[in-house]
Image (cartoon, rainbow, N blue to C red; front, top):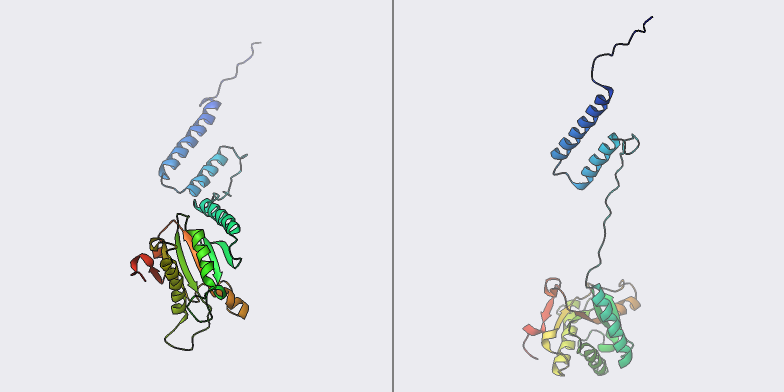
Length: 246
């Protein structure tokens, strides 16, 4: 007895169904890319992750959490210059046996020489002590060979003056100018490399709550700098190059 042959059912082959699904997904993918051409990076990553999940890259599960892009912080280029300058000055101070009351620190992107008030001035006075002159002479000798500007800053504590015609701002400026004037009169540093500025009590090193802390805040600083325009950053500046000779 002859065996009956099965009749093939009509319709597309089975492989065509899978192929059609893949083409449809690819078309959807490219339409999505075109419509989101101006997307930011995070949203784009989310869309790509979702599409990868649809294609089974993530095991058939949607990826809902997209890690935020990491932010890489790059240190300022001049940090290396500051470090090398700091090392050189410390070496020179040791070689010259500079007074230990002169401290060298890295501050505000520059190297700073710091001298306490007690070395240079009497309390409330802007007249240099006689014993301050050799200290300042050695400081000038330290700065002179360096191709840098020296910004002389005067700082005070927050104790107000008893007379209304004098303030901590006035005292800080007068002290900075007294140091600048000494450098100019002794021909230790050219005026083109000097400027004087007074901050009063506005930039303390320590809280003005004890006599010891107030003594720390009464100081003169030499900020050595070669980059940037300092005139736009200082509130109360007197540039030596713009002043008449003393």
